[in-house]
Amino acid sequence: MRTRYRFALLLLLPLATSLAMAQQGTNEKAKEGDRTAARGDVKPTGSPKSATDDPSYVIGQDDVLDISVWKEPEVSRQVPVRPDGKISLPLLNDVQAAGLTPMQLQAQLSEKLKKFLTEPQVTVIVTAINSRRVYMMGEINRPGAIPLAPNMTVLQAISTAGGLSQFANSSKIQVLRTENGKQVTYFFNYKDVIRGLKTDQNIVLKPGDSIVVP
Image (cartoon, rainbow, N blue to C red):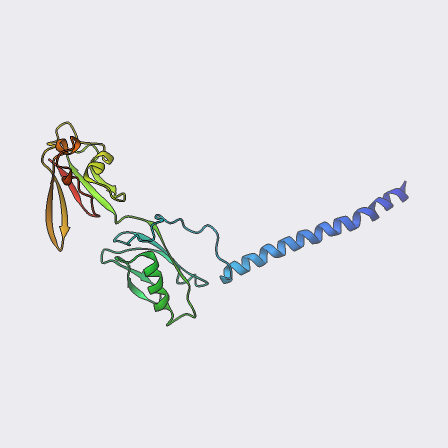
């Protein structure tokens, strides 16, 4: 009986040793992966999701950007676009961002960082779009700011805001827009437009427009 027991142990011992070595190898690989990620030799997982897939999107005030500089975590960060249109980054301080596409800003940052880093690789992702809004005011069911969809018209904006209230004067709606530093007023007659009349009043909105329903 003892002989059989010893024989079984001799058979199981190599298997147990192999399993232990395999587990040790797995742990070592995991530790090495952590060290490699800490050095910045691999890209981190869970990259931020872009708020827009439009390559021609122009960055605006209050947008939030994720600036990633490859192998330079000290420089990489998420930043808001300030009211003056600039962002703040280590090494570069203030950089103009509003008015540029993500690709244009990416190229500009890469060029500026060449003074401090070797072949910097920069990625710019718009993680929150806060600049493209229009403002619904007055006798509207859901007044306030709404996101500006591509090619959104006055009629579509009113619909998005829940339509006109029962007390609205639908024939004297105004669209207020700032052009070249001056306020311009466009008039909108809701009843005429939905009847197919004066459709030229159903203009395509721009960021910052205000729709006033008396």
